[in-house]
Image (cartoon, rainbow, N blue to C red; front, side, top):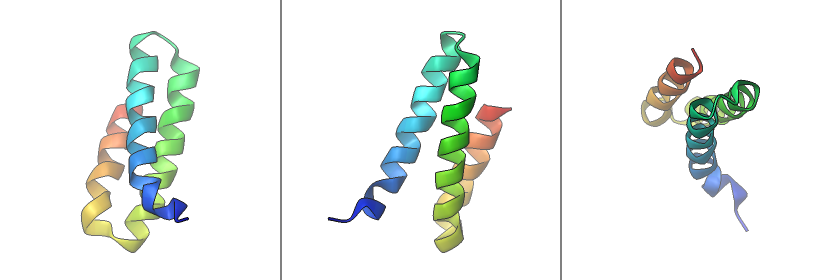
Length: 64
C-alpha cells in the first residue's frame, strides 16, 4: 500500500548485499548495488537530511 515506507530498508539491504558481493570479489555487482543504495539514500536525504545524510556518507565510503 505504501512502498515509500520501505525505502530505508531497501537501501540498507542493497548496501548489505553490496558488502557481501565485494567480499566475494563480485566487484561490478557490488558497485551496482552500492549505486542503487546511494540513489535511494540521496532521495531520502532530500526530505530528511538529518536522518539520512549519514547513510549517504556511509554508502559513499563503502563505494570508494
